[in-house]
Structures are given as structure tokens and as C-alpha cells.
Image 1 (spheres, rainbow, N blue to C red):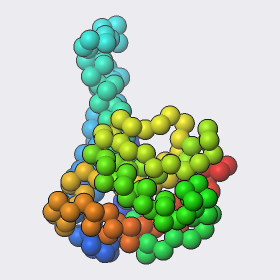
Image 2 (image 1 turned 120 degrees about the horizontal axis):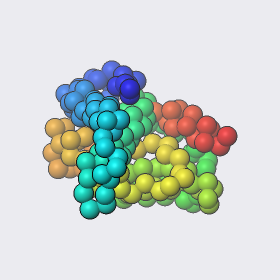
Image 3 (image 1 turned 120 degrees about the vertical axis):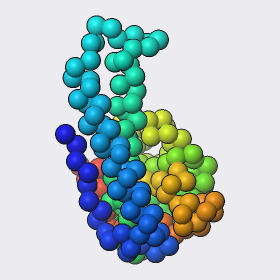
Image 4 (image 1 turned 90 degrees about the vertical axis):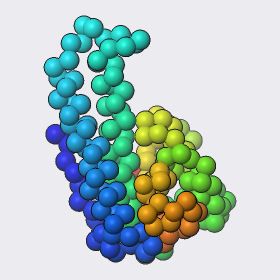
Length: 195
């Protein structure tokens, strides 16, 4: 069974992102993905696999929704685990992103553009196949991920992440998000990815 992880910061701790948004986002939306993932795992254990079919089957439907809910939970965990900091970036991750993008500002500009262009998620990940940091666009939880990459942090760009506080002003939400990034947490994931 998968469990709902606690927020690593107080719900009212973030600059520009309200306690109400964090409560709805974490306690209802994220928790819903974890709970549905568990429900699907239980259903898969008793589903008749002999009737599996690509056109339609209960098994296929469960497997599709398994990835949607698993990725929904995982991406939200990365999102929340990357918040609660002061937005000041230092360390080996900053050096690597600066080298890969040409400057830290170029990395931030690319990340911001990715977050503005996506329908769901901007995911910063390390790709061992070219030894570089990339910002990937995901329109849905289970679409847009690149096999073999290691996600380092995410920006949730679905409206539920910002509409209460920013209305339709996604760019201001992204700027506020960046002021709250816990770069130490990102740094830990970066160092772990190097091993």
C-alpha cells in the first residue's frame, strides 16, 4: 500500500501560495491519486487477465489508470518535496544546469517557458544518455516522461496549483514558485542521481 506523504513545510509557509491552496492541493488532489493508486492495485490483483485486450478490457483500463495515478502521486511528491525553501540556488546542481544551459538564467528561462507551454507539468530531469539536465513538458501525468531519465523536481502547472491565488496568471505563479524552491532538496536528488 502506498501512503500519503506529509508536506515538508507548513501549509501557510510559502510566499504567494496560500494555505488554502496547499490544503486542497495536498490533502485532496494528491491524496486522491495515492488512494486511487491503492484501489487500482487491489483491483488488478483480482482482475481476469485472460480477457486482456488492446481494444478494451477491464485489465487494460486499470493498467492505463495505474500509470496516471502512480505518476500523479509521484509528480506531486516531487513538487511538494521541492518547496519550502528560500529560492536561493547554490551547489553542484546549479553548476551542472549552468554548464548544460550556458547560464543559470538560461536554465530558469527554459524552465519558465516549459512551465508556460505545458498543460500539466514542467519536469526537470537528468538524462544519463547524454549526461545533461533537461526541462521536459508533460501535458498529463502519464504522458511526456522520458524513459531512463531521473526527475529532480517538478512544477505543477495545472490550474488547481495556482488558480485560487493567481487566477489565470500562470507566469506570476511560476515566479512565486521559484521563490519557494528548496534547492537543497533538489541538490540531494542530483547528488543521488550521480551515483
